[in-house]
Length: 75
Image (tube, rainbow, N blue to C red; front, top):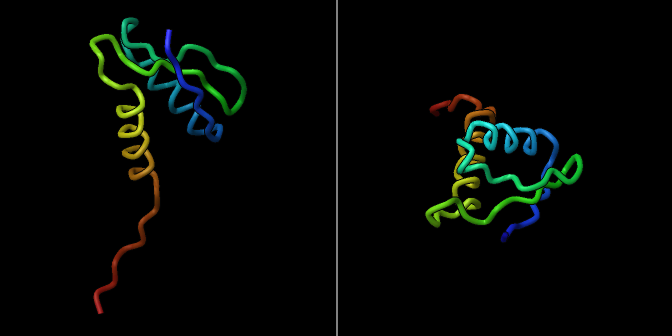
């Protein structure tokens, strides 16, 4: 089993755990929850697609949706 250590803040870790829970059993990617800020995760889903690339896209989308962007003021 190949994996990688992820270290992140607590809210991001909770979001990653939720993403993992939303996956079918064959696509669960969290191998071990180590502590409040660390997870050990698989590097690939079955079929070879990369977990970290998928996870980065999910996190970017999540952060984009949850970051305040002040309205633009046209001069």
